[in-house]
Image 1 (cartoon, rainbow, N blue to C red):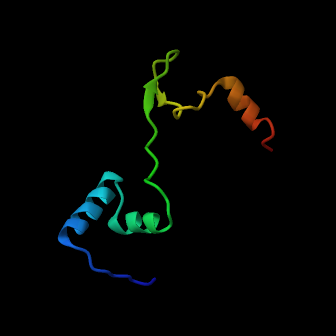
Image 2: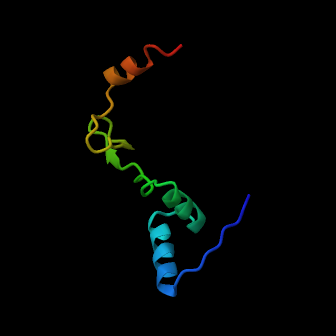
Image 3: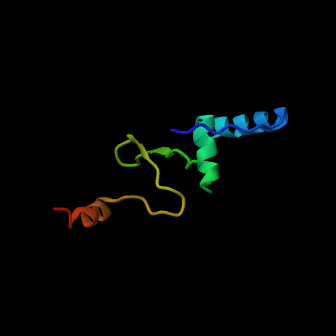
Length: 80
């Protein structure tokens, strides 16, 4: 694996490290993602309480419908 180094000002270094920390990733991974044109890391899934069982479950992503028994059965119907 190759090593790439470059110079930045102290303020730039602080900013880059701060942005990597906000994304909860290493400096190297942050710079790799940005070089590939990828945006910030996806948000971790949110959790919510199931209204039927009271258990903590993953909440649906914004704009996506929640999983139901019917939708899961439909998804796995073609699974071998």
